[in-house]
Length: 200
Image: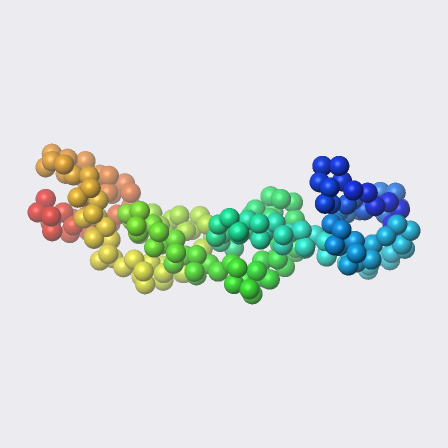
C-alpha cells in the first residue's frame, strides 16, 4: 500500500483526505499528518494502515465528544448515541467513552444527582424523574438509590403542597388538581396527605 495523494478538503480547510493506491482511505488534520508522518509516496503495511485509521478516528470522536460535553452534561448512553449517529464505529465509541469516564467527564452518578435536584426545583414527581432518567440510559438501581437519597417520599408531599399553593384558586378545582397531580406521576397517597395538610 502506498499513500498516493494528500489533499485539503474543499468544505473543511482544516481537514485532509488521504488516498492510498489511488482510493480514499481516511481523513485527518494537519497535526495528525505531522505526528503520524503521513506523506505522499510513503509505503504502508496493513498494521500501519490500521493504526492510522484507528488513531485518526479516535481523535475525531474525542474532539466531537468534547465539543458536545462543552455545551451540556450528557449521560454515557446519550453520548454513545450521538457518536453512533455521527458514524463512528462501536470500538471507537467504547474507547472514547472509557477515556472520558476515567477523566470524570462522564459520570452518570453526578448527572443523576444534578438532574434530580433540577427537577425538584421544577416541581417534578419522583415517578416522572424516574422514567426520564431511564430514557437517558441511567440504570434503574442508580435512579432508585439517588431518589431515595435526594428526593425521599416525604419530600414529594412538600412538592405537591407547593403545586397546590400555585394552582388551586377555589375549592371547586380540587378534583381537577388531583387529576393533574396524578397524571404527572405523584403517588396517590402523597396527594391525599398533602391535601389533608392543606385541609382540602
